[in-house]
Amino acid sequence: MYDILEAIEEWGWVVYIGRHRIFEVISMLHYFTIFWVVGTIALIDLRVLGLVGTKQTATEWQEQLSPWMWIAMVICLVSGFLEFAPGGGDFYLNFVFKWKVVATFAGIILSVMVYRGVPKWDRLPSMPGSAKVLAALCLIVWVGTILLGVEVANYASF
Amino acid sequence: MWAKWLETSPWGYPVRTSLWLYPFIQLIHFAGLSMWIGTSLALDMRLMGVGPKRRTAAELHEQLFAWNWIGFGIVVLGGFLLFSSAASTFLENTPFIWKLVHFVPCALLTHIVVQVKAPAWGRQESTPPVAKLAAVLEVSLWLCVATAAVLIPAF
Image (cartoon, rainbow over all chains, first blue to last red; front, side, top):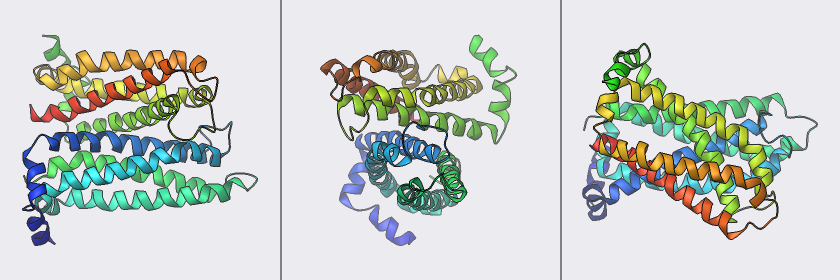
């Protein structure tokens, strides 16, 4: 895997990104959209927990916010990969980064589970306990992803 | 001089010298930022007329208002503690000065205008051009804040 990532670092467009100002633009997009993603996911999770948007159903709340969640998530993932590619080999050696990737995918899976569960839970008389546990877990995992993102630089070998 | 005082204050000194406190405060700052940006952009997009229109901007504003300002409170608290830990270094950092002195006040002022006017602008399904303009301006200014923040470690 390390060799593959090192080879990717030599690709023309990856070298270009790594050596030009566009890297800062990509960093900014990644930085900005991670907060947008987590903020929007948090609002949906908090609705499942009954802490926000209680004047409308969780489905209505989710329909209002989820397009931004998915759009921001795609921008965040693409910009994250573009930021990662010029130093892929070094990132691969960083164990905190590996945990960040694991946490990100766990967060995405949990977010999809909440997203798919909301319309079903909404048809029940009240939000089930399992839904609240899932939403709380989703929130914790995303906060953990931010913490790991913060720590990546402290364990960098570059 | 006050920068040095902040660094040796009962809150600045522990954040600077502890191994875990600085990243923990960063986490708090970033968690608050998530709430702040998530709620602000949801309203801004609705004011721009982009995305779902099931709710009016006024209704959305009413529901997001408390969480928006809770997020802001957390951002300010975390940011102040981070700044206190290395105030003199931050004050010599050009992107930080741009962020704090120019972009944040402008973005915050625009945000306050949007928050105050949203109930009036957002009563109907369609929002007036001034609301769209204010929302675009706010998002642009927060992008400037993010750009300056990203550049801080490079200087």
